Image (cartoon, rainbow, N blue to C red; front, side, top):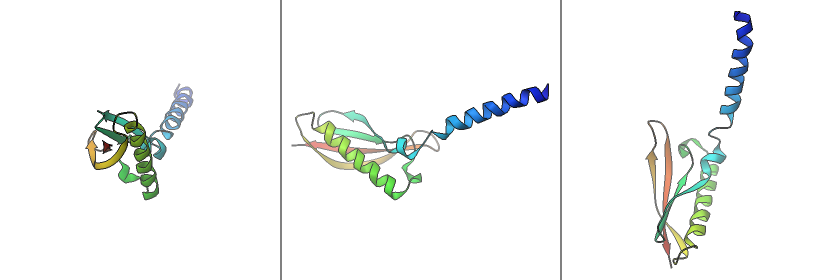
Length: 107
């Protein structure tokens, strides 16, 4: 009976590891998410995890994507230009943080 159960255990472990392999990739961590917009400002959230664990190049690309997303969102309102104002790290749990960047929408 033990021998019959082991293949199932190995298959489930393989499926679990394959499923987790795609989680938390730098690409998903750097995708900008609009977390707040009120026509005077827009807040962009970077990623699903701590940006401290990615390289400088990936971090710079994430900031460029956030800048572009803020410009796109601000262009929809009466104030057309997005200007970076501040950045903060917000704790989601004991070990997981996200970066939020605030942009002012100016004329």
